[in-house]
Image 1 (tube, rainbow, N blue to C red):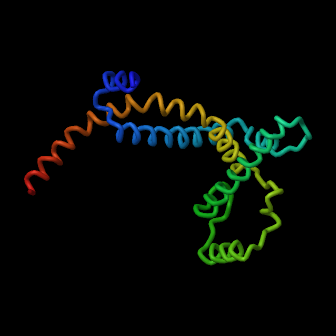
Image 2: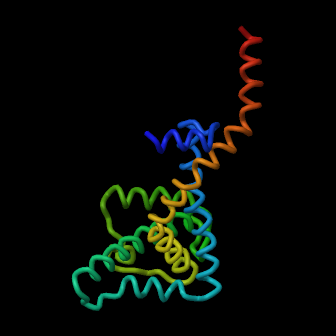
Image 3: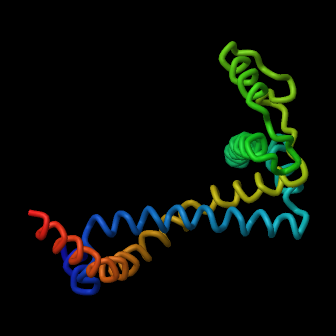
Amino acid sequence: MPYIATLRARYPSADPPSLIASFLILHELTAIVPLFAGFWAFKAAGVGAGLVAWAVADDGEEEQASWSRAKFRQWVTDGEEQAQKIGRRYGAFGIEKESKEQKEERKQREKDGVVDVERAPTTYSVGGDVANLVAAYIAVKALLPLRILFSLRAAPPMANVIARRFKGLREVGARYLKKQA
């Protein structure tokens, strides 16, 4: 309990709901901002495709390395699926925007269990901007422990600031509700 007492003394306006909200906001920001920054950095440096190629390469290394490689491969697959989804929806990353008919047809194929050979789990067709996005996705996933640590450390000051800023708004709301009663 000494930690909570210290936290309360240091940040008197930081109540648990604002702490939770601050943590969630910071956690999402530490994912979105590095994703965009990483995408542009990998694109500018031209190393996205190389990182993805390294992640999916199978060179028969030792067990620990193969576990990390398997995790990277899973992240490549997840990142590629997300990039394909965004590309189909908005016509981004060199992927043609999907019409409603094409979307319904694709969903029906998925429902029927038809696997597209190009989209099989063992094939990786990542290149260009998709590779840069997937590389940024891998970096964000790999930085998860640091993102959580930063979000935990920065949540109390942020909650305190938010609570102080919205205190006036709460008072206005309370007066309004009191007037309505």
